[in-house]
Picture 1 (tube, one colour):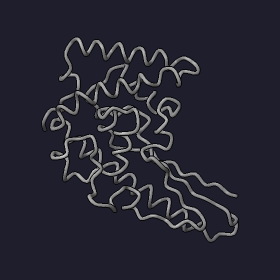
Picture 2 (cartoon, one colour; picture 1 turned 135 degrees about the horizontal axis):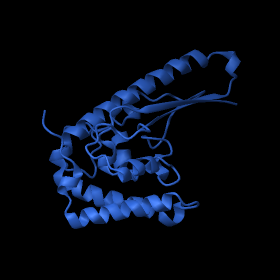
Picture 3 (spheres, one colour; picture 1 turned 135 degrees about the vertical axis):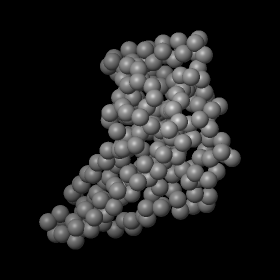
Picture 4 (cartoon, rainbow, N blue to C red; picture 1 turned 120 degrees about the vertical axis):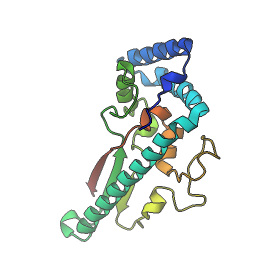
Length: 219
């Protein structure tokens, strides 16, 4: 098996020191109350710094991008199927009333991914901070921009529509090398994590399992 190469191999000594200081500063502010408005831009600065390096070496990380995308797709399929099974059982049950809604969300694992080639104290602590919606506003509903919703009178979307595979071309690879990734069928949720949250690419592409939540509201 080819040894997994990591981000730190591509960072100069000077830039590595800059990254460490930036992460230390972020974690210091994360422990303060009312930190979002003033300091959340530091997470974006870190993401831009890391992604700028990763995007110069996309071929090195391509295997993990593909594996992550497939693992996420399978996790979302499992969540989608379970949500519909629950909804089918309750939608015609008068015990739940006439006004009810099911909301399903999928999140990255709360524990730092074991497959990640870099295990530093700051990296693991930052992974936890990134899952705080107070800092990472677009992660409030997890890996999707919008959660999966099933409700009375609402037409349920297909799974392909939910993951963005129902529109041409079926590949959400904005921001990546278009030629290198043209046949990957990256799903909408991959694009959401990469383009709209403060997770750097290498923060999430080593995740292989996920955590789902199902919420039922009654009117």
